[in-house]
Length: 274
Image (cartoon, rainbow, N blue to C red):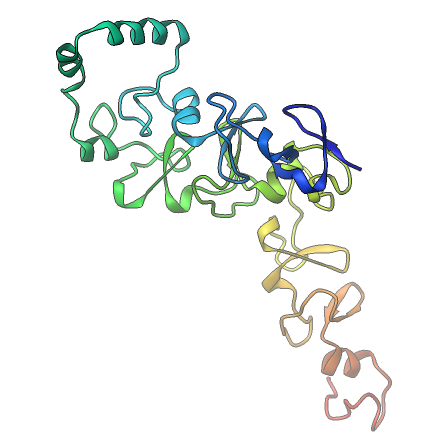
């Protein structure tokens, strides 16, 4: 069944569809909510369920304020003040314009420092972010390894993730499932229904997050934890045997332990476990 575009509220058919923020849009309707620039799936930010271009709009509207912060310090939106300012600048002589805009900080300093002259703090670890390790997203500077999905901890790249309440999320499955429309096959992620807390691995009893999960025997395991209970060989989901809710490799362990006994049965006569 066709869904409705969040922008124009008309039906979105397959040939004209793009999916973003857990919803289906017409290609021409996926625009920055502030400047109306056309956006691409996975290449924009989000605030309160609305799409924004990363720069200048999202950084200026919702990022830290101040000159040279986030690379968007010259875009400070304030409709009444901006209108007056632009009129004054337009009517001023060109010589005066030069005097107003000439005293700028050097380009290198503005790209790596804040207005106070110090490195920004990473929102994840609260440590200083220096230029060589910096990635900018959501109007803030992060250490590269610190820019991770808030739900599954998958490492993200600037401009290719969603946002909710100032926190980054991968588009699929996490953002779509947590904040998108609910229901099977909605947004292509209907099979991912998160519990409030991650389940515990039956082998190590530690929490199992989505990125490291494999499901077998009706439980969620860490991939390296799904092993044969006898020989510790790593197993793959759906290709192993089970006895008393424990996984076993088919041969030789399950056949020798629980198969028919006697020479020539199951080809496991040489594997007789005491």
